[in-house]
Length: 259
Image (cartoon, rainbow, N blue to C red):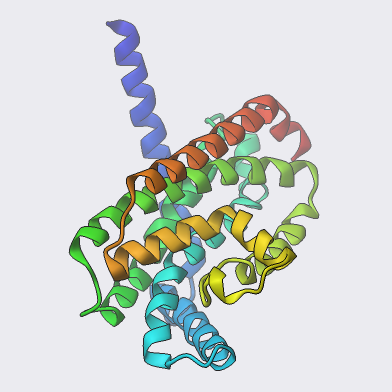
């Protein structure tokens, strides 16, 4: 019984620490910013419009139809991109605090995941407003489960990305380049069927983000949902989380030493 109470207290402690650091991250991000949290809408919306204009011209698609799928697909991409980019430098960002205080270091990547989710809410509302009249209620509920599986996948990635950058400081810049390339290899502004058979098509198809984006877009806009697809997304998310936990556990005592 006492062990259960101690476990509950630890969970509450970790949850409170995650919320605290998430609040700090959001405060630091928008401090002294003229638009403040509105950047959560302006920046993603600019990327969405630019991507829609370019790819609708390339594939000769109607702008009104194309922007629907792009804006919904961007929800998954922007969330994952923010988690990975921000977590890559999270331990270095709080280096002084880590050396002074003793707390579970994994709360920092978890705080990045939470702050990124909160940061994305405004754009999600905007994207759903744009898509009004095309949303399918059953698929919309199913899409929340897809976002949950993406969160599991992103959390695992955040755990090992944050650790790797402590030991190899130039990894932060490498991950930035990789994420730029990954954006174009993720079928947000196009469909896999639009790509000719070849190496590029294979790369896009094996990209795990492609499955999240396609499933999320299909469920929100077309009401299409598949339990087997969801189980697959949960499985790869759980597998990636286990990898992240393993890498963190193997290196958690070395993080402070290398900072």
